[in-house]
Length: 296
Image 1 (cartoon, rainbow, N blue to C red):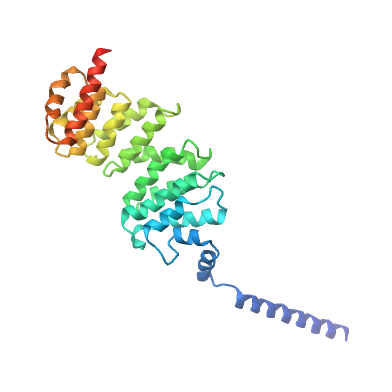
Image 2: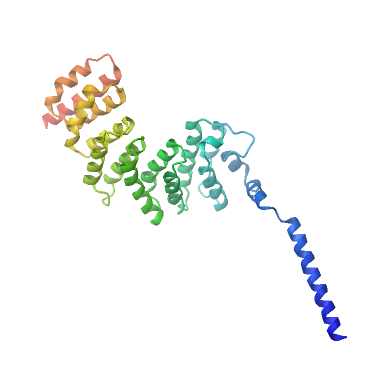
């Protein structure tokens, strides 16, 4: 009797356990619904920002980003990261509006009182993934330089530095190399761990690369000029004299003003007399710079 009773009690207990498990299984959310449950628990302002509200237009969303506090809880920060990983073609806003939201959101994350240790790693991961649009990858590279001074000293911070050098070397067919050069120039002027000579030499190498995109050359010229690389002067002179792109010519003229000498004044005065304000204004500024230098 004792053994039969024990068996009966065991089976009853097992039956109760299995019944409880079945009930649990029936009430648990299926995997595909877990994301919806997480989103539903977020406050309305975060839902609006990440595009999970009825209003998906740019203006109300960017206003919500600007109103974010500096003490966001981790679940809301994680929701922001999920939004940063969204791709342009998966939503309806145009390029500059969609990436503008992401841009402002990263600034909001950078302003958090608890510096988000994982932000650098996320930015690097998105830069490396070439399935993201060029605008967003360009923004990520710009944030490498902007975030570096205040980013926690971790592996992600080191990877941002490596990402800047990688972009300057390997993204020359887009505007991303120019963005990397500008950020390295900024860092080299403020942080001794960045060599001005190395940044200057790498930027000149990119500038003289036949495969380099014109839009990157605009920034590369300025890096070489700011860091005093006189080897860029012949390049600037040639671009200013022969290039049709007014933005490139304006950048080259500005570089001549920084690196040039009185020999350049005749050419610059010819540009100053131009009816094209895009050439006239930088030429005037370049003439003034060279004149001041000659009087010192």
